[in-house]
Length: 143
Image 1 (cartoon, rainbow, N blue to C red):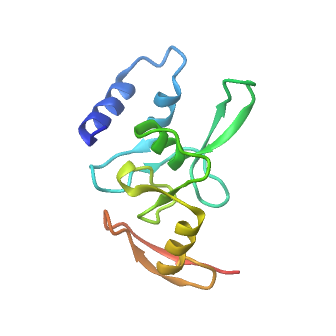
Image 2 (cartoon, rainbow, N blue to C red; image 1 turned 60 degrees about the vertical axis):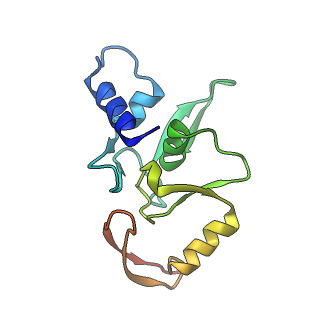
Image 3 (cartoon, rainbow, N blue to C red; image 1 turned 135 degrees about the vertical axis):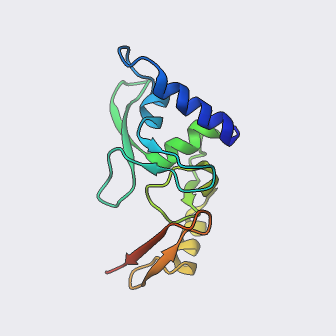
């Protein structure tokens, strides 16, 4: 799905009537700020203590509620289901970013390698800039 198609879909969702029950897609995109195609799309919904965005969803099979991370939901809404053995990695290192251009599938080993290369591991401390959109943030990692 292209940026223009995604932006149009988000616009249509926001302009729809709210008197009916919202779909997962509608609930999700109503909690996202999209400035442009390349910048971080910031999640404004619930957050976990770890700083990642999250949503509660009801499982279709057993109707139990479960949490889904916002960046994983964004990936699945735009691309496809995520294989069990893979993670969705933030290429921008912004935990609340849900821009599909900033998300990439990878293994746990890939994710750890990213963390070490970008000095996001325990003990690292520095200002960082998103390579995709230029968002600047400071990370302080303590054990």
